[in-house]
Length: 461
Image 1 (tube, rainbow, N blue to C red):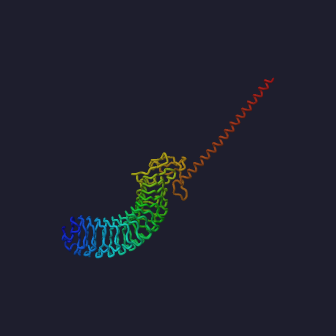
Image 2 (spheres, rainbow, N blue to C red):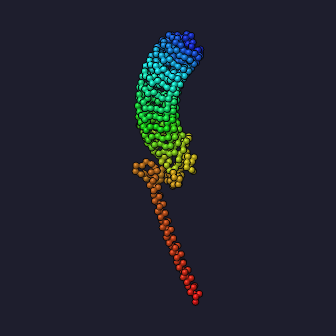
Image 3 (cartoon, rainbow, N blue to C red):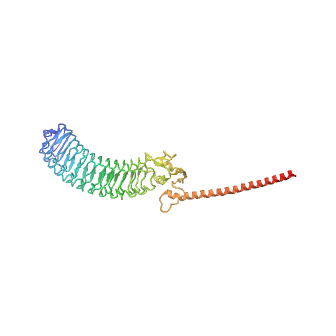
């Protein structure tokens, strides 16, 4: 191991660290890929000025309670990927200056409630990729300066009440890849400084109303790959600083009409891979800065014509792999599509699912002058053709209406009125012709009757 005030060593059993003859004045020590063994009370004896200790990728069977007692100036301790099954409760009692603690990639099933009791200076704690199924409610009670907490990749099913009550300065909370089934309103209420929250890849079925109401500084929120079927109204109403939100691959069947408050910083919204059949008209109204929206691989049949109207910065919308119902109900959205041809992604273009004969057509093909609009009731109805400028010819806007289809209603009404007039004219003409034919027949019958009478008189004479 080369060293001055730092040493880097690999190979050899963990249990023989004292035999390496490391000097006591080391400030940095890196041990990696050591052989299997245990850490003893004398493993780091006398290293009173050591500030950073990294011991990783080395199978460690046990850790003695006094292993780190002499490390009174230690600021960073990394025990990553060692397969450690248990840590004694008093292991860190003497490491008061500790600021960073990495315990990821071990085999911890439980943690002693007093393990972190003396770590008032701790700012970063990583417990990811262990086998933790639950945590003591007071585990983090003395970690008032904690800024980063990583609990991802465990088997946590719930967060006990009060677990995070002391973490007013916490900025990053990683809970992804656990077994959480629900999110209550209380556990996050004290996290007013939280900027990043990752909850994806859990089994969350429900989120309580107001669960995120106290997270006024939240910027990034991931809820993807859970089991959410519904979201409570106004769930993100008090998250004005959101810049990233993922909800993809949840079995969401519908969304509430009011879900977001003003979030001028939200740039991306991922709603792909759900069961959504449509979106509420006002869903995105407060998200004026959205640049990218993913709606591909859903069950969308139609969208309101003005669902994206407030998104002046929108650069890309993905709409592919949806069962679009290309009937009259889609025309308002097609008008928006005509006005924004470069926004919708074409790598996987949206296609009609039905009705025949439009099944399989890309939505853009419906903008090329096809005059027929299949009725939702099955009878073909003549639809106004798109003009050369893409609009509906002869339209007059109805007061208070922003829908192109509403503008087309006066034209359709005029055509219907003309059809009725033609019908009545033909009907009257038919009656006149029928009367003339009847009169001619009666005249002929009278003439024939007179001829018969005359013939009978002549034969009688």
